[in-house]
Length: 315
Image (cartoon, rainbow, N blue to C red):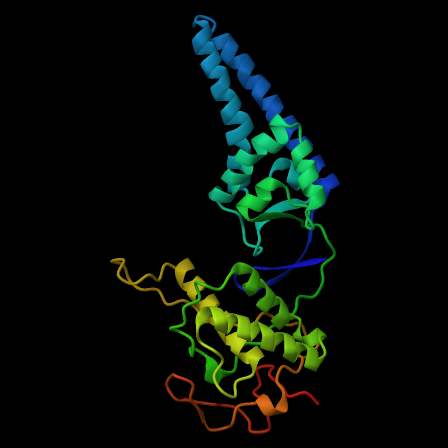
């Protein structure tokens, strides 16, 4: 099972598709595309009988490109990664972060697919899929996509507690452009799996990831702030920025500003396990104001070491 996490930090329990299911989906797509191409070719031959050979050849090439190359690209873009063959096999193309594919992803996959699937009869695609750890072909590697299985048993999603209230908005001016996608994935997977890890192991992982994020943003965790709380606050800041972009809240665009909704924790069923301890007792910030290169922030919450947001000292 491979855990893919969306840009909104929602864990997707999806499994990368392997070669047999992908090959079957490609064969179904090719069968449909070839049938459409034959029908279009017959219609062109019947309607262009009066044209010369050069015009007929040009129309045939155009029909080939539009049907066998442009058709799959358009279908994959409009269906958000689900062609007819993939729908029949329960597959979907997603980005590396679990989000839906866009036109540029489908275009790269389609153009490279002409070489590794059509021109080489799928030999290159099969070899690349067998070599890849997640069954990706060259088109997926260059497009930054992954084909996953949708028809898998539903598993409970990991719970990622929000940052403490006294850290909300603390990193509003932070530059997150240098943080790569694979690091975001590692951070989110670590936070959502905190409840399943040993407290010491979780603390070590969070501390290492916090140092990696701080090295790329230039803003280390404030003194006394647990690394897991720092990571959660940075992830929340990225969520808020993505929501602001999604709702069109760009300033200076001539239109009314739209305030992005604040990031909220996912729904947790009553049977879900309580959040795991994320912070060591010595790492809990003091009850007084916290200063770290920014405005004074007062910690809110009870004074017994529990913030009410999932950051609980280990027993």
